[in-house]
Length: 92
Image 1 (cartoon, rainbow, N blue to C red):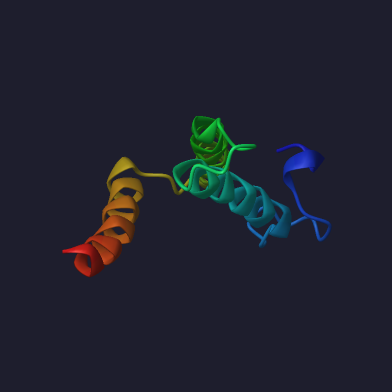
Image 2: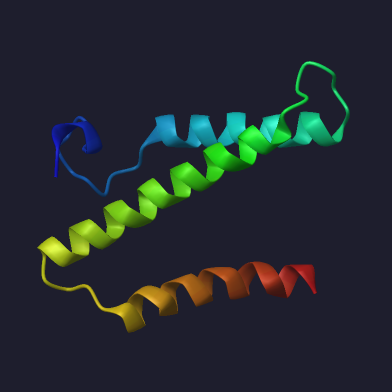
């Protein structure tokens, strides 16, 4: 784990407000695109940024769990399913 992926306290699992800021910018780019706000004609860039952030976070979680010897595919996918199920209940 590099120092760039850790927060100031040195804990790799701590809350990272800069990531939430990037998520906000990505979501706003998509919203402005769908609202036909002319300066934001590239809403797909917001989606790309959001996927890169998600990939970074998931890779960090997997890397931390593997280095601690507690990673398992079953547990990993169970967490993904639980997270998606919570949202899908509200949508349906």
